[in-house]
Image (cartoon, rainbow, N blue to C red; front, top):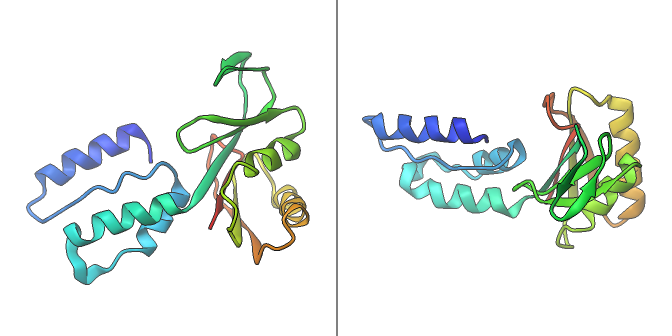
Length: 163
């Protein structure tokens, strides 16, 4: 899910004596969706496109804090503000109120999802993530479920997926 790993995986695939394809996902939630689409009997070629399609069907955003003042996507961001980013690092929302910025970022998702999963990182706690899950469910009461999972990711407070 990072450029260096994708490059190494591509090189390893070229060196393999077995049919191998790399499914380039952009984050762990997309990677999990890809793995769940795997049909072992279909082989590498039969799986690559299906797995990539499955990875892109999951809507995701990443939540982090700005480490310095900057312009991101044409918007001014101050150090310490919460940023909600799309999988390609595009700025969806920014603000001083973390939960409000996250909810604003989630508003960019295409409607129709029934499950939201919060993967909380090293800088977040279970209690904080559960509180955010309650706010998400209150904002979208028709959701089937909001799951909270530990992700232990070091750079993003949350990885949020919707499907």
